[in-house]
Image (tube, rainbow, N blue to C red):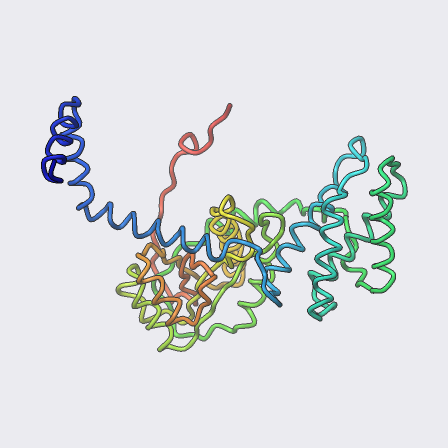
Length: 350
C-alpha cells in the first residue's frame, strides 16, 4: 500500500468521528490567527527567560544569586524568632545549616563581610543561637549545628544595627490622614516643566521604597534612571504611551526585577508583585517631595523588550516591568480625575 493510500484511509476513518472535521478546521484557522501567534511568541519568551534566569545555579562568583539565597534561608529563621511565645519550640535546623553553608561560600569567594546581607545573616544566626539556649531538643544534630554556628560567629563581627528581631516603630496617629492626602494628590502627570530634579531626592525616595515588602525579603528591585535627553528619547521611542508629552519628560525610570532573586518558575509572578510594591512606595515617596510621575506601561512583544534592554544597557536577567516618567509639573497642569470604582466592586466580604 502506498503512503498516499494509507493517509487517505486514515483520514476517512478520522473524519467519521463526530465533530472532528470541524474541530480540525477551527484549529487550522487558529494557527493562522495573529493573536494566537503573538501569545505563543510571548509565552515562549517567558519560558526561555524562566529556564535561563530563575534559578540559583551558580558557577563561580555570583553575588546576586548567592545573596538572594542567603536572605531566603536566614529570613526563615528571622520569621521563626517572631512567632507567638506559645509556639516557641526548637525549629530551623535545615535553614540554619543552609545559612552556614552559604556564609562559607561567601567567604570562599572573598565577598565583603561589611555587606548588609552578610551582616544581617550573622545577626540572625546570633539571635538564633541565643534562642536555642532556652529551648530543649533531643536531636543531637540540632546541638551540633548550634555549636558550628557559634564557632563561626566567634570569627566574625557584625554591626548592632542588624540585631534581630526588634519591636516595630509606633505608627503616628496622623499617618492615615497623611497617606490619604498623598494618595489623593498623586495623579499621573503628562505636562512636565524643565526644572531639574535633584538626583539626591530620587535616592531618598528609593531609600524609602526599599522598605517595601517582598517575597522572603529578597528585595529583587532594580530601578534604572536616565537623565540625558538622548537616552530618554531613545527609550521612549520603544514605548507606545508617551505621545504628546514624552519630549518633556526630564527623568525616566525603568522599573526592573532581577530574575536571579527567585529559585524556580513557581515564583514566576513574584517579580511583578514585588516590583509593584516597590513602585507604589517609590511613587508616593516622590509625591511627598513634590515630584510628579506617570507610569508608562510596558506591554510589548519580545523584540521590543530585547531592544529596550540593549538601548537602556539593562542586563538580560532583569525583567522590565514598567517605565516611569518623573519630574516637576508645569504650573497649572491639568490631570485626569481618574474616578474610582465603588468599594463594592473591590471589597468582597466572606
